[in-house]
Amino acid sequence: MRATSGWDIRLDGLAVGYGDHVVLHDVNALLPAGEISMIIGGSGCGKSTLLRHVLGLQRPMAGTLSVGGRDLFALGGRDFRKVRRRMGVLFQDGALLGSLTLGDNVALPLREHTGLPKATIRQIVLHKLALVGLADYADYYPNQLSGGMRKRAGLARAIVMDPPILLCDEPTSGLDPVNAARMDHLLLDMQANFPGMTIVVVSHDLRSLDAIANYVLMLHDGTAAFAGPVDALRASDDPYVRSFLDRRVDEDQRTEVSLAPEVQQALDAWLER
Image (cartoon, rainbow, N blue to C red):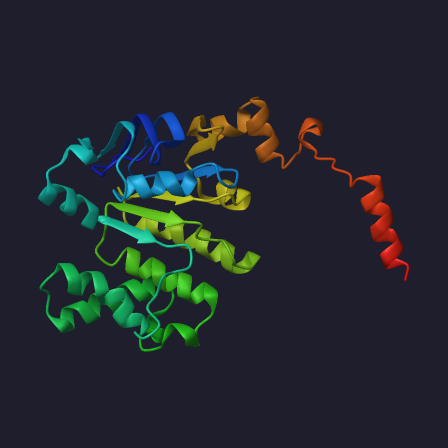
């Protein structure tokens, strides 16, 4: 474990949802600074909902969500906005603006939140694009590049202000195995280049779990099925954890549904025409 002065993310008795509908309840976890934490679980388990709350886009129904030792939703308006500005986000589809070049897309946070000169912003942008292997593409438009390159540009924008927290939503989704592996390596590079950065990755990619995760929060049945170091996850004998990691469907989860005999007969008769 590296020594850092970064911002960890602590969830204490957290309940989140929409309106009166509770998606997750009693979630307790510490996503440590300086490490890569993965939030995993089946589709619809609440991963993206939890990420929205970490971003401060929605208020929890119960419990606390602390960032760097401060209850995020107890902060005053100005301090709340300051913390949110210090979070970098890599969206699932890159979320680049098609009318802007890569350089201008990456520069957006700097232009919005700082008063730096244009020349300085350009230098920072080129440096961040170089970190993701896109230094020669600053003046290209998103539609001129591959999906993998657009995701890397999204990563450059997410880190352009050297955020203490980097949140990544499904960074390898839609990528071929080579580009997915490259994204994993880039996240490891971010960990090396920015000591103390808290990196949180929402994913169900088991290869990424093996490649980059230090800490894991697994969601299931509306709560945390597991929260701890990745080695402890691999050693777990919990039935759901094992079925998830082993990609195994239990016999009692198999679905067998048959058409009514008369409906099947009508279909067969039609197909034989």
